[in-house]
Amino acid sequence: MSTPLAAVDARPRRAELLRRELRTVHAVVLRDLLRTVGQPVYSGMMLLEPLVFLLALGGGLAAFIPDTAVGEDYTTYLFPGILVMTIQMPTFGVGARLIVDRASGHLRETLMAPAHRPTLLIGMCLGGTTVATAQGTLLLSLAGTAHLPYRPAMLAGLLGVLVLAAFTLTAVTIALAVAIRTPETFEVVLSLAMTPLLFLSGAFFPLTKLPDWLAALAALNPLSYAVDLLHRTIEATTSHTATYAGVRWADWTPPALLELALVALLGLAALTAAARRFSHTP
Image (cartoon, rainbow, N blue to C red; front, side, top):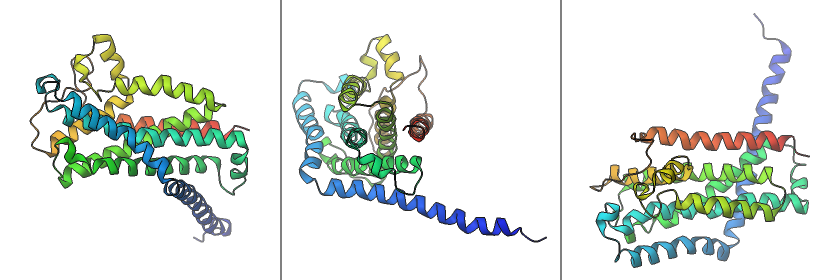
């Protein structure tokens, strides 16, 4: 049975369209990387705040917080939370640039490219994920300052969690940027939402120390699962004997695979919602 001529002609056309969309994603990701490399002072400042938190809180408060309060050395306990803080700043920048580009008219020029609008958002999300992961990797190289061994299995596991967390944070930030029209409102929303989320994630103190109603809110916090996964990765890949008490649903502790799935689904849902809204935004 012969293949219809129209179907034969459609195959190379679809392949060419796919290559064009992939080139667009590559161009957007490369643009973000070049922007980061071209602004070393700004990139260094983004890394400075979490580094100060690690050295100041870890080095200062560790002398006053007994190991029994967190189940381990406080500097070691703090390290996963500082990693999450490190990837936050680059992901926020993606949303801020999207709003600024829209206000300045630069986004309108970008939309004239021969690519679908969702493709541009995917490129922005992957670009933000790449930059945030690079920032997290730089801090990950300082694991020794948190009394952690440089074991390949641990470093690879932490890096994998950072990639997933960076993707989800970037997707959520893009979804907010698509829905919000002004830079001022965007900054207010982020400051009101993300700072409390970080403090309710178990980054600086165990969730078991929270009142029941705050612990329930922490269980709804996506950052809690990212921090929890980082702690679990350290425990699973080192000789760490500390028992980390992370997210709990009532009296049940969700397994790590379920936490991974939840973080990934949130990122995909946020990116999908942003793409649908962006496709119909004038």
